[in-house]
Image (cartoon, rainbow, N blue to C red; front, side):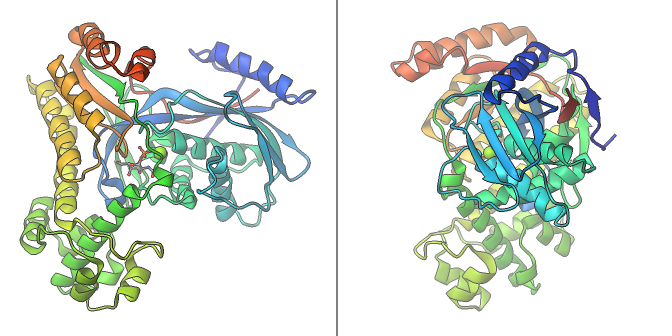
Length: 460
Ligand code: NG1
Ligand code: MG
C-alpha cells in the first residue's frame, strides 16, 4: 500500500488529455528525445491545524486536484536540463552531482534541486543519472496550497524513478520534509506527507514522530471552497515564518527549564508535553501561568535559561536572527496548544453522527482563523476581509489555509448552498471590488475542492 508503483501508460483520468499534450510539448522542447516517465505530486489545502506541524502536533489537510507534473527522459551525462510549460519560468540546467541551493536567487527550480538533494542525502553511494525534464504546474503560487512542496516531492519522486530506487511513500514524505529546509524555511512535514500519502475521497489526519496518517471521511453534505485573497507571500524570502518557529521553540525551552528538564534537548511543544506527561489542556494552563504577555527580548530568554545570548543563538536560533527581535511567546504557545486541540476535535466530529456536525466543524474553523489572526498574527487584512465575507455569505466556517500572511482561505459550506455561496462571494470580494486585480482574477480565484489522490508515477 505504501510502496510507489509505476503504472504502465497514461491513466484514464481527467488529466489524460493534459498528459498527452505534455508529451507532445516535451518533444518540441527536447527535439528528438522520447520521454520515458511522468510523475505527479498534488498540492494540499489544510482544513485545520495551522503552524503546529513543526511543533510536533497533528494536522488535518487534504490533497487537492491541482498538482505539479514532471515528464522526463534519462540522459547519459550528469546534467539535469529543466524546462517549464509556463513561459515565465526560464529553463536551466545544472550538474546533478554538484550543485548548490540558494534561497536568495529566486530561481523556480531551486525547489527541484531540494528534492534531488534529499535523494542524494539518503543514497550517498548511488551515482545519480542526469535527466531532461519538463514541468507543468496547476497550483497557484505562494497561495498556501503548497506548490513548493509539490515541486520538491515531484523532484524527489522523479529522481527515484529515474534511478530505479525503491522507496516507500512515507519515507519519501519524511525525506522531502527534511530536504525542503535547504531552501531556508523550517516547516513541519504536513505538505510533503499530504502530497505523498493522500487517498482520493478522504481528508487525512497526519501525525508525526513517527509519521502516520489516518483517512478522515468528511461528512455528507459538506463542501470545501478555496478562495484566493490575491496577496502573495514568498515564505522563503521573508522572516515571518522562521520567527514563529523560533518563538515556539523558545517558549518550549523556557517551560522545560521551569520544570527542571534538560531544555536544550526539548525543541517542540509536543516533546515537552510528552516529557511532562501532561494533557494539552494542562500544558496550556501551565504555559499561560508561566509565560508573561509582554514580548520577550533575546536577553530575557538568555537570562531565564542561564546562558549568554551567543549560546542561546547557537543552541536554539538561527545565526542570522536579529538581536533586537521581540518574541511573542505567550500568544504563540496559546495558539499552538488550542489549535492542536481543535484538530483532534475536528477529527472526532467527522467520525461522529451528531446532527449538527457541519456547524461544529465550521465553528472550529472560525476559531482557528481567529487564533491565527489574533494570537499567531499570520493573517492579513485581505484574508480577514475575505473570510468575513465568506461567513456572511453562507460559510459555516472560513479560515486562512497554509502559512498565511496572504494566499488562500478555505470555507466549509453546505453542499446545497454551494452555488449561491460561490456566486455571492465572487461578487462581493472580487467583481464588485475597486481593485482591478480582484476583478480580472475572479474566475480563477474561487473553486470548490474535493479530497484528491497522492503521488503517482507512470511509465510512458
Ligand atoms: P505553506 O507555506 O502553506 O506551504 C507552511 C509549511 C507547513 C506548515 C504551514 C503552516 C513548508 C514547506 N510548509 O506551508 O509545514 O507549517 O506553513 O501550517 O514549510
Ligand atoms: Mg509552501
